[in-house]
Amino acid sequence: MEGRQGPRYRAIADALSDDIANGRLAPGTRLPTHRDLAYRLGVTVGTITRAYTEAEKRGLIGGEVGRGTFVQGQRHMPPSDPFTWTPRPEPSVINMTVVTPEHPMSVPMMGATLTAIGASPSLGALLEYAPHAGLPAHRAAGAQWLTRQHRVTASADTILLTTGAQNAMAVALAAVARPGDVVLTERLTNYGIKTLSAVEGYHLEGIAIDEHGVVPDSFDSACRRLAPKALYLVPTMHNPTASVMPQARRVEIAAIARRYGVMLVEDDVFGFLVHDAKPIQAIAPDVTVYVNSLSKSVSAGLRVGYVVAPPALVPRVEAVIRALQYSSPPLPPEVATRWITDGSADRIAEAQRGEAMARQQIARSILPASAVCGHASAQHLWLVLPEPWRRDDFIAEALRRGVKVTGGDVFAVGRASAPHAVRLGLCHPHSRDELARGLRTLADLLENPQTAMLSIV
Image 1: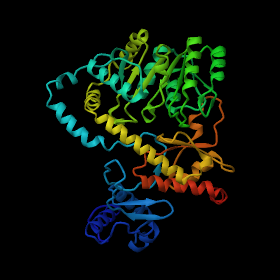
Image 2: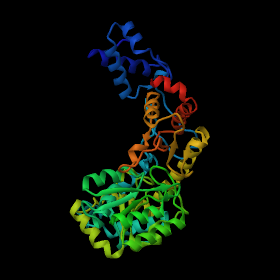
Image 3: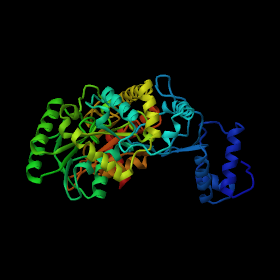
């Protein structure tokens, strides 16, 4: 490879680019190791490392742990894939730590929508401060969406706009609790509520869960002992275990909350994935502050969130929004409103449901059934590690082989012992093929623990 003038590592990367463009290096070609190429070119190994890093940044090459470095080519998804994917280099590490999926269908829609908004006479209003609770049209569209996709009981005047679900959680809890107050949650819970409680000064207490979610007796006991202000819970596609709480238990949890005057903060971001799971808010709207967003269903980058509050609590929630951010920026909700109104959001959500189910099927065909927990429509699953695996060893060995997963300790609350389990985000890997490769790596670890343990030692 003969490069142009400049730093040696960049000249080598430029030469790689020329060779690929001219067809001298075909897609899939395995490149020499760092040491071999350094010897052949008479440079240091560090120079080759920097050259390969630069070439990978440009999308020219990609590494696969344990296999080597390869020239990248155009990638095409199989016709069965419902999304239109943009080709890009295969990552050197398959990341399953993130649950939020990609939303490629929204990319072409966004350009057309922004063009239409730019030509609209209402554009000026979208560049001003919105009312604290959001523009009336945006709140009305939110009511349509939550009713249609999540079976929520709500009207425009009980819905308030936020900047995503994390912001909705912060607003909801600030409306019902103060620093130092006890807030209950599942013993294993969404990491976002842990960080939020640490920043805001809530005293977070975990209560027992089983395969159906919060255990009613544990909730009742905690109410009597701790006088909590709220219970934050994810009853549908629980994060991290992907369980779905049965209807009868939702009724029981609502009755306990009403008995002790405890407000339920229901996180339903995954609710669109299961149409037969009626939210607790629809059962007991008087004791539930409901939070949701479009991040899992339509587009994470829009940062459009919703809070549905009991009518008596709406002024308090609105005051919290004013104090924390004054109002949500109106342009993203305008995009969301147009997509909700014309059906685009429903089409994206339907595709996400299909993709989640397809990826669950892939996972369950590769991983041992005894280790897999969670609903078959979830965007993530809970993998219980068999003996002799220990959580930290499994995570470290998986990463060494090119797969990142999230350990159960991330979700444990307080002094609760963290299980030897990991959460797998199934919909973040760029393709089903990429997901399958990562899952096969994990399956191999589960089936051959002794061999893997030797590499750790």
